[in-house]
Length: 335
Length: 174
Image 1 (tube, rainbow over the protein chains, first blue to last red):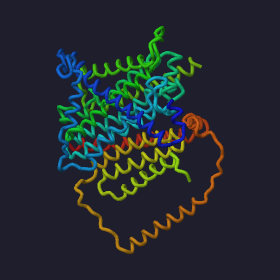
Image 2: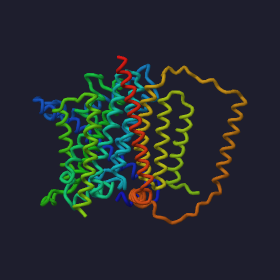
Image 3: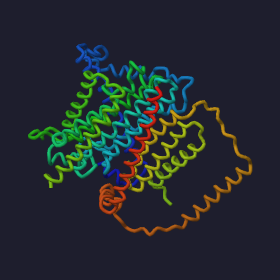
Image 4: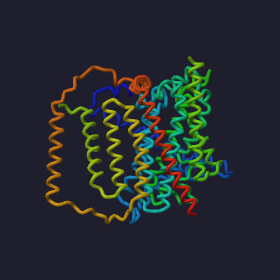
């Protein structure tokens, strides 16, 4: 359907259809974010032997995040006097906009996708890199040493971990012969999921993805007990909510990407093809999100110097070796 | 000329790119300039997309978002941020010469490209261009490609060696 729309002639009608679709996607993602925050708090509570949110909206605290969002929206919007005002205002927008833009290329099922790009995977990596600029801007514009330190750490960390992230996927690209996410899923339908063919790449990718998401154990950029809150220390109310929103939308996008790249997207397990693709995607996706939350509950934060060493001295060589191995396997066994 | 979506997209992208460039020259704070540069580079990537060179566009964003972030870091670390360093403006004569130069350059470019007519050769460059770039890079241009990688490696090693030397000296002083 989207393909026909993309090829039809431009006009106001066309524009409004796209606009409505994008708004629908935005609301779906906002719904996910509220549920993800609740799920995170519930799972963390479960793992730490407490209940988590349990009052607002029934026994399971279903409306807790909604109440939190409403609180954030009506909160006073503070801009520090010494802050660089234009940058301070534009930074949350620059941090959030790319997180929503990357959603365009991720195929949720074989029919449900906005843009079937030839360079889908690279598009994700490139656009998500723009968020770093927003974070660094926020850190600098706040005119606060903790913010600046957090921004610096975020920039160093995200640029370093982007490299193993891309390198680990090159193995998959070699096996598929395409950067198109749809074709990557189709290749998994023929040969089995890539988590079986590329286990090393999966581990490297998962670690690098956790670092890209700035989540524990890689949350040095916002380490609350050293840096107060990192680059968003001075932000409050809705601007702060934008940063949090960007973080959780990236969690959505990255989990979806892991599902598509390694877990076969919407493809069913053998003999279970009668369950629709969307359900399979949701199941695998939820599993990835659960593992990310599990990481947060169980790993201690690593030190700043170890962080960079780990990216450059462990993950990158392993990813390169994986490319080499994959090329050898493809050349000698899969001809 | 009809007002198609492509024309509209090109105009807005070009406008953002030009405004970004002008702001880059006119702003006074380093960080503001870098942000203006971000807008320019991203809209140039958008223009690549319009030319159906999406691989190039994605690489443009990928390389420059990293590069700009690094530049921002250096801008923060190596410059002063107290604002009161307004440069003295040049005299009237200088401004006039500048205006003439700009007009001359504009005229030269205008007359240069106004009647330029590329023969529209039907080609397939817009289909699967990632694959095409890869094939020609690794068959036709393999030697320049390998040479570039060797030069980059040499630069990398050189940078590390230079940085290491500084470290040791500091270590001796302590």
